[in-house]
Image (cartoon, rainbow, N blue to C red; front, side):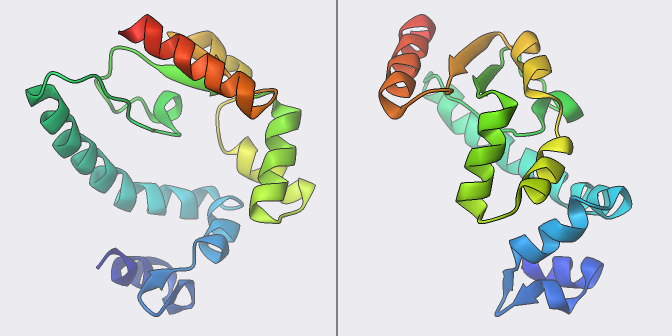
Amino acid sequence: MHSAKIAQIFGQKFVENGKVLRKELGKIIFSNEEEKLKLEAFIHPLIKEEIVKEAVIFEKQNKPYFIDIPLFFEKMHYPIPKSLVIYTPKEIQIQRLMQRDGISQDEAKLKISNQMDIDEKKELADLVIDNSTNLKNLQKEVERIIEEIL
């Protein structure tokens, strides 16, 4: 259903077999502010609606929960009192993004440039998990935050 709207907004070449070709769409979104704003105008209300639905479920059960919002600080459209940032220095972010997505350093830098600087996010956050080393350290950091929250 959403893929049809993406095709309508950006063109059929960004949808194949009912699925959005995210990598292809990303190429124009991350390099063109006007196109990025078009996508955000369509997708952000849908995301917010889904977040509200899920939050109600957890709140009724009186359970703590996290909401993953990559552009939380950039958009600030959410009445969320506490924020958590998973911190990785920019250089490591770039390397991991290149490896995960199979993209060049320039493409990775372009993607990251569409977000607030990670060090600024770290300063704004109420809680920070350090993800700059290895998986074992990340596990310790997550456990530390869980202890702190509970």
